[in-house]
Amino acid sequence: MGVITHRYYDYTFTCTSGGECVRVYLVGMLVLLSLNIVLLVVLINRSAQGGICDVHARRMVPPLLGAKLLLLLPEAGWNGLGTVWAFTSVITCPDDHFTNTAIDVLVCLDWVLFALLVFALAMVIDPIGSVKLRASQPDLTLDTLKNRQVTRTWIRRFRWFFCWLNRDKESLEAFAQVAGLFSSLFRDSDLVPSDLIAGCVLLRVKQKRESREQWRLEIMAEQRLKYKSDLREVFRGKPVWLSFDKAEHYMKLSMATYGCTFVMYRYCCTGICRLLRHTTCCACFRPKKVMVEGDNCCMCNMAGFKELADMTEDEIIYANFKNRIFEVPFCIISDHKTKSIVLTLRGSISLRDVFTDLVACPEKIDLEGLPEGSMAHKGILITAKKLKTYLDETKTLDKALSLYPHYDLVITGHSLGAAAAVLLGILYKPIYPELKVYAFSTPCVITRAAAIYCESFVFTIGVGDDFAMRISVETIENLRAQLFEALQNCRLPKYRVIVNGFGYALFGVPSKHLNTTWRDDRPTPHHSVLLPAPNAVPYMFAEVATRKYTNVSLYPAGNILHIVHKKKSKEEKRRADEKT
Image (cartoon, rainbow, N blue to C red):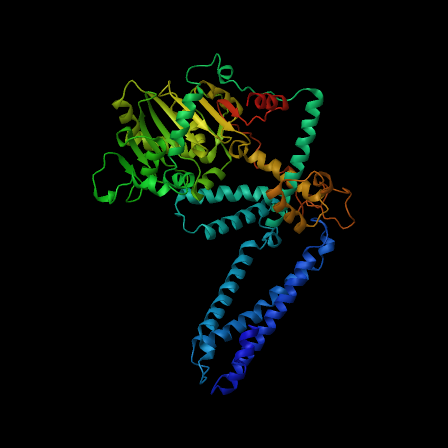
């Protein structure tokens, strides 16, 4: 802006009309931008003061933010003046320097930035301060009103950010359920996204420190957890269907349901070539051997499935790649190698699947054989019930089994597909007593008693520190409490924690940082408590750390095989070196 003002200011005196407006615009924008730069520099400096919870050190930030918001009014006025200059004939000048592309782009970008700022303010503004009890609401508490207000705010945000999703009954229900979960987790916590990032970095340091201490204690007590490396020993005395080879085979089929997306991820350079040999040009106008729904005109997802599963079209009975909230893509195949009809379900790969995962409140499930009071993940249970209804109405599964009456039914899936496979197996168990479920990276989906009931037909496999198998509402609530504790105990400024986090991601956590991050745990005089004491004013603060969205714990189902990478001991390394 300074270059434009320096270059074109003298030309404004040659304008036949509106020259004063041009000069006011140039000088005014230069002044506003200069004020913004100075204000942002001061704001950055003040925001970086003190520890994360030391609000007194950052007491000047609210007034500075207020000043920044006040500058929006003159900015809007000057943008309007610039629009008049650039896109109307009110200002007339003999030279065309004032209507060049640079000025047009500058004005457009100013409006875009202004609109984004207003949109961001509308999305992040905290509505809790406007909540008040009324005489007409004697049966409600202030906390209930706050919960309703925050839930409505989250629903509004979801509708704005995910406006491209279908506004059907399922999506509205998912928005409401996820909004209720977010309200329960973060209401009254006074956190911003950068606090969450800093908290995750601190928890990474804390976890490494505790793991090292636990490892040292186990070495001293000689009570380290022992893993078995011999598969024959692991599966000795187990039923035939509990086989590592079978699980490996079904894992390939479950991953194949991800289609062309997973092919491109797995084979970044050669993925296109691998898909081309299986695609069908203009498939919309050609007769198809296999009934395929929800795929594109070139059958790319079908091509990806054939490539990953290493199967011919004759072995694929039915494929449905439609993906909506509470609906997952699936395929039905005739697996002649294991003499089974395999129903394979796709896992989470889209935002629709994420909303299905986040509808995480427990739902009661009553079926023959299940322990009384069994509960399941609501979003995944809805998905399994909708899929069963679809299969029953279309008779797709019955037709597949009638083609091969001596084949067994096997259901398999990965991630969300694994959880849906478990619940679908429970729903179909009374109809097909011999069915088996092979689930990979299964989330926490049912209560403990129901998980034990599934041991007769469900085989779950997890690898290493699998995130999906450990995440649930309960673990998220525990994470929230630990995150608050870490933020309170940390004395480093937030920016230093986040900068250190980049270093940790690249080079690991240095040993000297394991203790210095929490140096001097005594709170400062102006230390803000994120989680107030129970005797605080009840309608102003809540015990966020102890607030529970649900008291029901969910678990992965069936027989669980946990595979981890075993580091070689010094003795094993020495023996390997001697052999080489």
